[in-house]
Length: 235
Image (cartoon, rainbow, N blue to C red; front, side):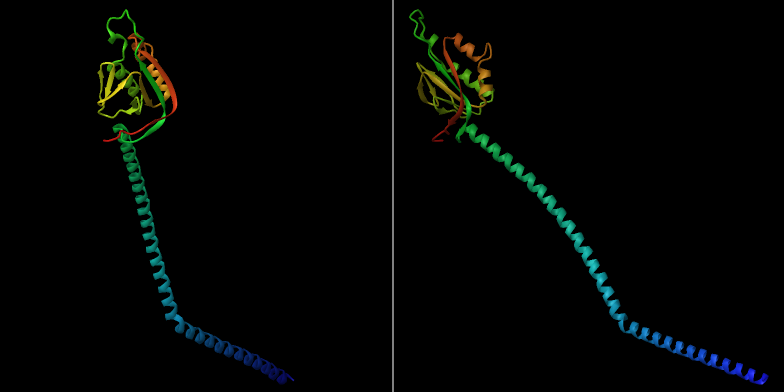
């Protein structure tokens, strides 16, 4: 009985060892197979994966270079726009100055609000021996013209004739010469500018209006909303 028990234990132990051996052998075989399969996959794809990584890195580098170039071009565009803006302002200023010079030279038609000042000879006075004491002279006209320009008039005409930078006014008996063209009284002096400013300048106490009235010159002034002065013709 005792011998049978020992043999039975040996049988069971043998079976356990056999099973463990089988399991270890199977595990080892499975591990070798998996390692072989992994090694085969890595060896087969390693160059392809490395090439893909190189391509990705190269593309990223190219993208970075392109992005830097884009930033540089955008900065150039901003600088060019700033330069164009300055040039545009310069051209605008030049065009504005040219327009002012043309207006100053009487080469362009001018329209706008302003005033009209009329100077007339006084009524004949038989008691006055000297007729020059009640007629309009060139210095009367000059006073009005100068005051209008000082007050900001942009253009002036006398009896419809536009004054230019080198115009002259001369008294010739009962008439005045404006650039060699004769005009009899009354003399209508038209000026384009701010009507309020121009009229205020003429009506200052002790100013041009008072001086002319004291010299027996009939003075009248009217504000205008729309005045048209034609350019000088023939020059």
